Image (cartoon, rainbow, N blue to C red; front, top):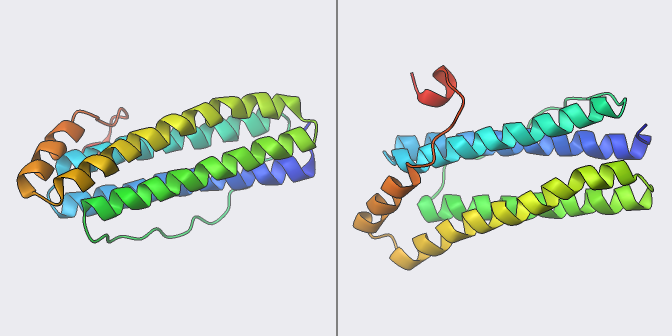
Length: 173
């Protein structure tokens, strides 16, 4: 069974994961508005991944006989100055999520909740991958310095990452 403190922290992280999906959907909409479908596809896939993370927290809370408490999801920004600006914001957000996951792990250790600590190990490793994948795109966008031709090429490459869920929400129409 989860302590009240741990349950509250896990519910808070569930909310952060839902916000992450919301943020990436907002970024996808921004990219669609500026006709960068590959960037939009990458962000939709990222949003979908964040929903999967939220579901992991949701299921874990119930597996540990806790109660999920859904909170209001903050409205994300809807505009960025450039593709680089959007990906820099995504990178900062992933760093924030990494910090939150690490704080959860520290709390689990403090609470001597070793099951939760073990559960969080997957997220600790996942965040290394999350930060690295976004940072690679940030670095490439910095390197091309806004060149339309290079951004078009990056857009084509990012279009290879497609969301996996079928349906109207992710496939546009």
